[in-house]
Length: 158
Image 1 (cartoon, rainbow, N blue to C red):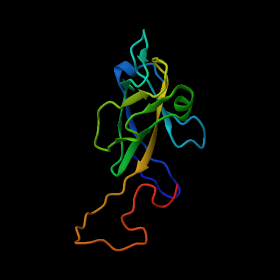
Image 2: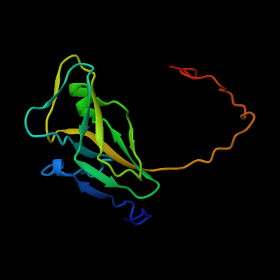
Image 3: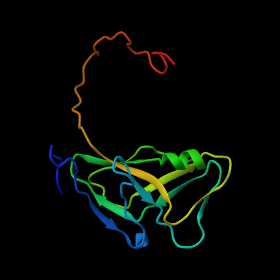
């Protein structure tokens, strides 16, 4: 694995293609400027998974990864799938921790009013690799004052 540097802004991820993912394209960036790599459905050959309106399903990708320490993989919806078919990732963004070695699976939900088919090899989500900043918790008796204070949801306008 490599770490990012000013001259090498990328990292290397170890990827294991699981037996039920054989024959599927590996995650890749579709364009030079893409931030996310597409993940594909590693469903069995045959009938598709049918997601009815408001139904959800855990879809396997047929891959497991090994991330460098202090990195995560964020699993996010594909915008075209969301717009055109109403399919999104339910726990978005899903987080794959650097110490997880199991298969990446994606919780899809159909927010449209019609059934949607998910077939083997369909691009179902995208994976964005991001650095993780860990915080140290410092318990205090009170927090500093700000103009906003504790006003929440919508308190700063629209």
